[in-house]
Image (cartoon, rainbow, N blue to C red):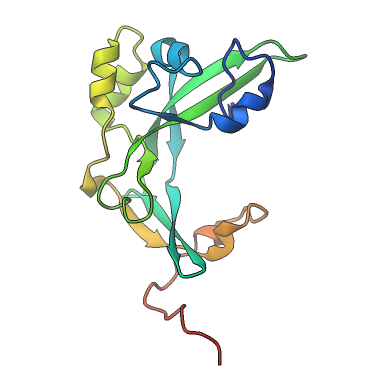
Length: 178
């Protein structure tokens, strides 16, 4: 198991991991925090989906983006091993790219979901940086669907299947109480 929030090998302490949970596809090859991991330590982060929030008035409504066939998503990731602490720590980050039309109403970025045919090339250390960069693009529209899910997911203390319970999007959640 790796910890989310990449700690570069050169980092003086592990606190940098709080600001490196995502690596922008467009700049990771040049950013010192991600450059070496992009070249030599790429990984796949399997996920059932990801959550983005729509803000309506004062409410934040969560949407779960997933594959319609319920197969896992293969998110592009980078990993590092940090050895400057008392114990080595292995960490990772998720590569993010610009949002596709499905995600864009809620957020301008989204995880890089690799196409099935790109997984081996992403992991192959012989793949050129130019080829890797060309693979990083918004996910094809037909690969994902979105469902509004329970607002339980808005609280980090909630970690159970009820967080992904599908909500009826047609309910009038915005009606003010008398």
